Image (cartoon, rainbow, N blue to C red; front, side, top):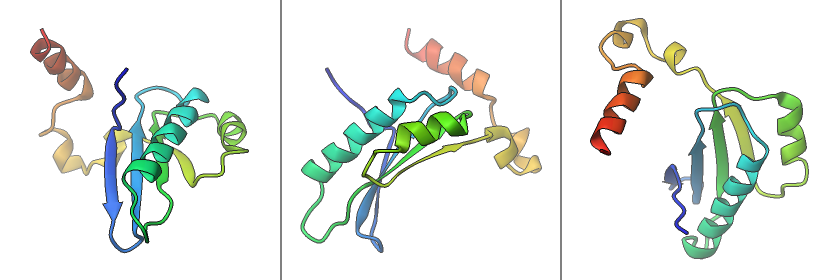
Length: 113
């Protein structure tokens, strides 16, 4: 089975990797297990001497605070959960010039056929 990290970055000032998982759904506790898995793999395979522990960030469409707290309670890695509102993050003058999520999904479905 193959596994793919959504976004992997390295911060040269903090000397650590950042693993970002993007979910277009409401938060589900099992997402933390997958993110923890990715962070452990990056720490084991990519980190070199002098690098700090990898940070994990899970971005979901929405989250229930109580579920998130339970899911993170005994995780020892630096992992965080945040929700997002893509449409609200863009300046108004850019919104009309970019495709909608639905248009992008339709194009991706067409390309994969």
